[in-house]
Image (cartoon, rainbow, N blue to C red; front, top):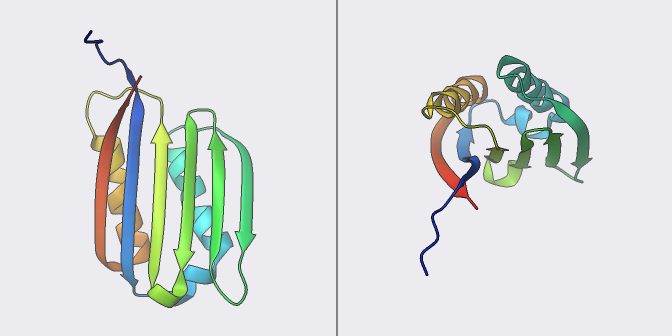
Length: 122
């Protein structure tokens, strides 16, 4: 029996490679500040934060949002950042997600990057 899918959110997945300022890959505070600007700009509510800095390099953090989650993982040895944002809000188009993606491209000065937006459904 076929069941109709019901919207449950959108998932933005970004890969940022060849970061111009490689020091950003170990600067958890700077990366968190960038993501807090995203949350403030788009009215996402941060409920909790969790972070870890790896030795000798790299960091990861998660913002638990009332709208779902935002996470960042860095791999300095590969000059790579993985960014994830899942929100359960329904928007009429993907503008907000492409806006976030281009903001991060600009801030990170990534020479190579990709973005994927996935519709999530129940």
